[in-house]
Image 1 (cartoon, rainbow, N blue to C red):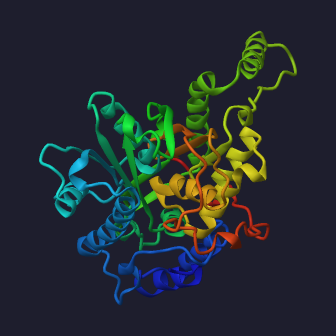
Image 2: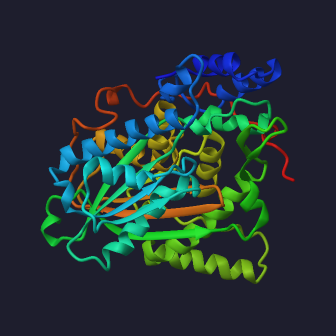
Image 3: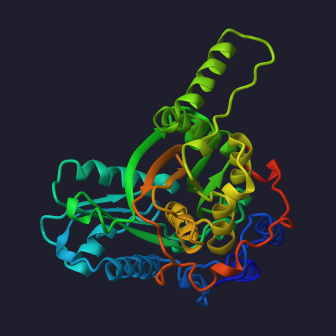
Length: 403
């Protein structure tokens, strides 16, 4: 666990970082929406920090094994029963792969269909879920294990390019393990039924492709730059994804309103504003990826969402930070810990990230989900929500101009 102050201090001590860069990071981190109880890699707190492969592998083992161990304890599933394994981690691409790490640790069978997804950013967790869904359509009576994580050890930037410091301010350690089944006998014991998956990819548009970009700075230090095009690229990708998803989840009344509005705007009828469908009529719970406070603010504004609809996202960002592809699972766990998931409820997870990509997954609750002991929020859920009104807004000046 690491406070914002400690994160800044560690960067100052061991990164050969200039004073103005430290001041910039300190100003940034106060605007992220993160609290003082998020988690960083153990390697960062060592003296000096161990940010090499050994430290990164240790972080991956801690997070991945911890998540899978809890999943197996919950489900009482024998490891040999797992027929499909999909692992996603964007920036830690190690040999052997993380999927091999899991097969070795849990002694999965030789015939397991194993996939390792890298370089696909924060939306990769839901894309991995979509891949598992497709594989389950052709592998009968199977279990699919999806593991979503990110690696901070090799993603922490210790240079002086300010455009790369958003990563240090936002991203924190986290991970999730999800078990999917197409066995009819598991229907009664399952929490959710997977209803829809929709994936969009806007990399054909150059600003979308380059708005989050890993490269070297002038000193040869590797980091991830974030440009001013980020918010525009995110909204563009989200709009494309939502436009595809809307017809399959919205009631007819909302579809008609949307269609009439679209036709009128195509006919250039004056003073006609785009109609934002009421997704509250289609889903009961909305969990957008916690990319950062400015992205959540923009998403809330564009989709006309209430503060209540954004609560799980903002509290996840505050408590755990941006855990990349696993963030939407922390949000779902928040709603479960609050006792808000009732039988028949529809749950919409949406994640977006570098590329630029956006993925939506819609679930239906098969039962009312009671509070569980093995939930990351269990020991402190009654302390939330917390008041975030004192968090200062971001300025567009904090983003690096696009090339």
